[in-house]
Length: 147
Image (cartoon, rainbow, N blue to C red; front, side, top):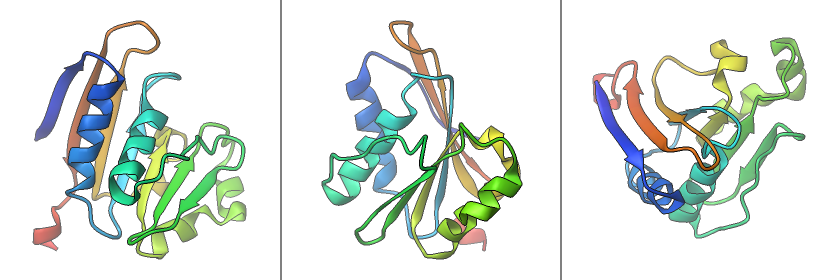
């Protein structure tokens, strides 16, 4: 069932939705962020970390694959855009991010679908740059209460 489907008037709408979602997240939750380059994935991640920890220093981990933001709970921000082979991600230890009780944000989850657990929050952006944008947020898999 779709939780949010909204046309975005601007980047401030992304921040507002990210803050709303941040309030509902718990340690161990995974948020999969998909959409084309420049669609708002990193803007969403920055706003979510700001809502949780008051930090604004979030950048895309495109070249390092992973950034960790300390706090309670910590936030792991993973970017799979440059991933050529899931074996490469295993060598980098990216799976460890799912084991430490952090909230895990995954950009470009389609590059390694098996990395994202069945129960996750899927956030998809349509449009980029000056084009109109839309965001769709869906809870995937069993809810926390059903576990």
